[in-house]
Length: 144
Image (spheres, rainbow, N blue to C red):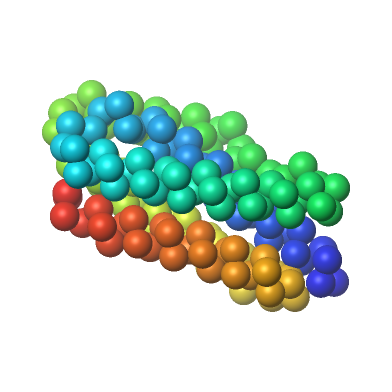
């Protein structure tokens, strides 16, 4: 059970990291404020670093991980681009990213509870991703 829960939790973390990286990359070119751009770039680096750790662990378990479903990524892209077309890029980016972070924290917290038998290293990775997302959401409040 420990190994199954570990792999399942790693897959969800992998999916969350992919979604975070994709979302940040989708909006980064629209950011005008240099401090907001740096905040998002730093968070992108944090996501990518954690993503590499997750990929290594998944590889150790001979698992390919989990990318977000195409429909989820597509809907996110559409929502982002429609809202950005309406103007006020920085405020819109902050709003969209805050919503994404909140959804990520909620989902990851649920999976952390659901896969309680996962090993401690994997739980710590999930907690780190929750921390990264929570911190980003809090930091983005200054730009709403």
